[in-house]
Amino acid sequence: MPAIMVTVASFAPGGAEHYARYAAGVLPLLSKAQVKLRERLEGREALVGSDFPDLVAVMEFPDEATMRFFLSSKEYQALIPHREKAFSMLRTFSCVAL
Image 1: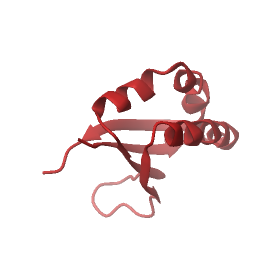
Image 2: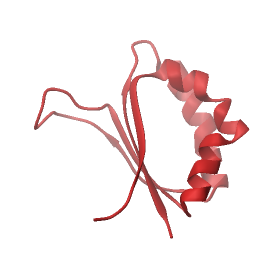
Image 3: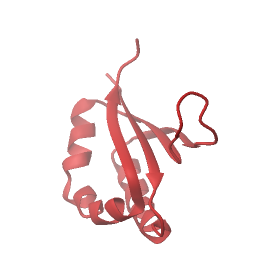
Image 4: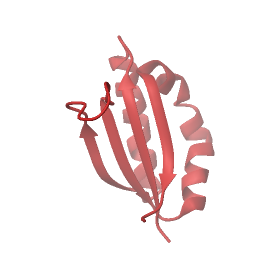
């Protein structure tokens, strides 16, 4: 059964170079894992509350095991230093339809 991963993030000041490196490394890994990037969205305005993320990404993995393997892989782990410098806030979670 497909598994959905959602990431919401805000960019860190001066993190553009690290984001570019992170994205350049992650996108091929997602393709290799047969992940469908359903949406990659830019936050525009807070409608409820006072803040909003700069980035929202919705990804469809083949299953939960593939999602967990992806996140624990050596290739992805090597990109974490760039991820940490690219974002001031990052939340990634799995979701199911209601």
